[in-house]
Image 1 (cartoon, rainbow, N blue to C red):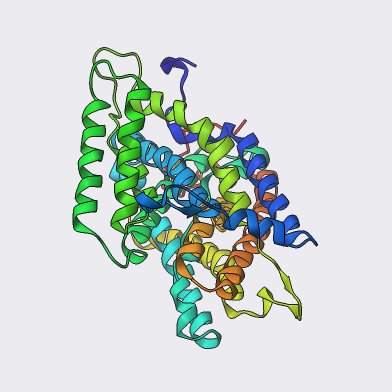
Image 2 (cartoon, helix red, strand yellow):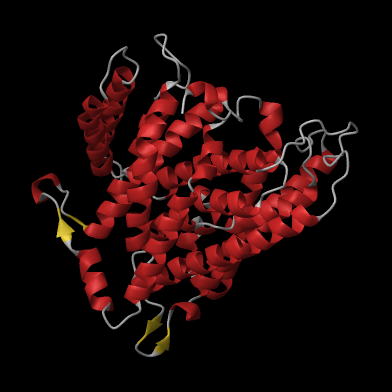
Length: 412
């Protein structure tokens, strides 16, 4: 695809990644089935197998390599797309982005508050460590559901969800970097930042082969891992360093080029492998039900399902009623019901935060089970609400700004 034929936003191209969402789902279902089968010991042995050089302190379990290593590819893509949206995409005009940005903030604050209330009431102080789990939204799954079930709805709905997801990812990155970093090694962090700076210089040169960037990226990842900050942050920083506009007379921006280069590996390899090792939760113990007896399970479930919906829909309703800000053309408040439900699909980042939140298997397993259950329910409810919304009649001024809607294109 040439740059002239590209959609206005890189995020819109993610709606073509329905196969990636299917791979993600297959990997998660397979892991869940294996972890609850008579052969579950083999699954846990595989996930816990240690691989890597001990001399470099990289003797990590296979599951840790999936979450710390492979997932850095996903976060690089997130960083690239964030850079594009901030400079040339949906976040470059503050007034246009204001409503979805505020909706994203509300969609993270309310789930965290609901989690804290449920966990404090029934789970004790240890459970509160997972407060950030229900704040995350899985872009791949949410957009896949929208692409399949949102046909006939305004194109603006996709843009709203994409913008919201951009901000959600950005805030989730900040949460991971700050809330889940206990000890930081200054020299190692400085080494990581130096490697990222070198990456930024190389990626801007007139001629730089992609393979020449790999050793620098590996160095940045290694230093970041050793610093105590979650290693995937290196992927985000390198993604943010990629130029978002065409340079050196090139026909397309390098965010497009490198995003296109890495995205297939992220969608087809990194995310499914991570899902396979993260979703393998043993739901039933020897003595009967296990994870569903933990308050963390319900804190995550209610946080993602109810918290995201109330946060996104409630914030949007307040903003559009109490301020001059309005939804985009052709988009009404009722259209935000499916968006609120789709943001309850936490999955990838929520599973990662669940791993970072708890050291014990009981809380971690319950949190992951809550993520899986909420994501499944949110996806199903979101699909039904999309079809319900598409069947309802629409008026000439859906966003109630006093002028007839002009941009009335639909999702095809």
